[in-house]
Image 1 (cartoon, rainbow, N blue to C red):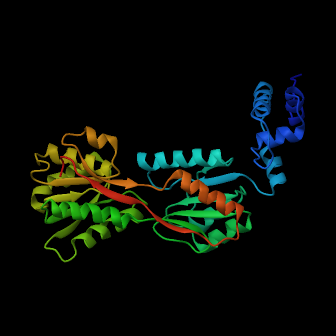
Image 2 (image 1 turned 135 degrees about the horizontal axis):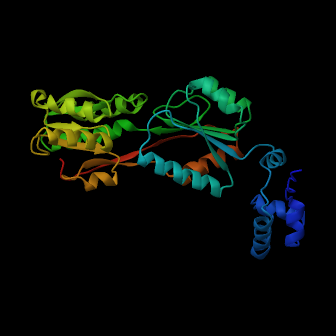
Image 3 (image 1 turned 90 degrees about the vertical axis):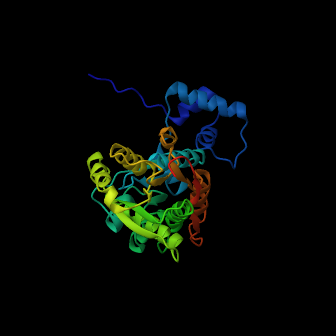
Length: 333
């Protein structure tokens, strides 16, 4: 017969540490309302590690009246290194506030249908990247017990807190830079990857706004993220007459630059190129890539917003416009 080892309990931790079960609960739940010495905290944590004790999330949720789970649906669009670093910082900040961050993959589910799937997990907060969630989805999440719904995208949703990502400014910076550089026939790469149009369209609009009233012309350049597609675009480049290009982001800029150079197009002599995101790889290119440096919201500030909303679920939804942008000129332009 296979014997199942006994699961350690908080009572076992309390006996080993020489404290009460209540003290174990206060320490492991990071309760700040009760003063406990650092020496006692260390004894409790050491006892828990020695016994392999893990707090029961469901039991803790029952005591608190809500879970400590913050659900982050996995983005349905490709995310680059910049966004990945932001998510990592956010998860660390929420962890320090004693929340458990769970990333949820909902392939094939969108909008309010996805919200119903998220609600089944009973999170205390949901952070929704991109667009698609509607007021009905927010209501579903709140009825399931979510105290905070925060969207990160181009627009706000009724009932949810919103971080508005101002991608127009990114395009405006790039367009103004190319014009100042002397470019008058400017191409703007429009990624053909599904889901990116929600960011690409505002960036295009920003370029157009920067050039409004000038003698410059703007041309859209649809481009798939493949070497073959970039090579086809580069082969047609001489007939386009373009002397500048905003390539949506650094990854598309690097893809296009390589293809243009393979066709003998000189950068920046024949065409100036600028990307966005300020990735390190862009500094390793020759010529080094000009870029729009993007300031994402602080993960610490967003974690604080989530915590405020959880503590005061009836408060007025907060709306913050984020995404600072500034040009870093290098050799490619």
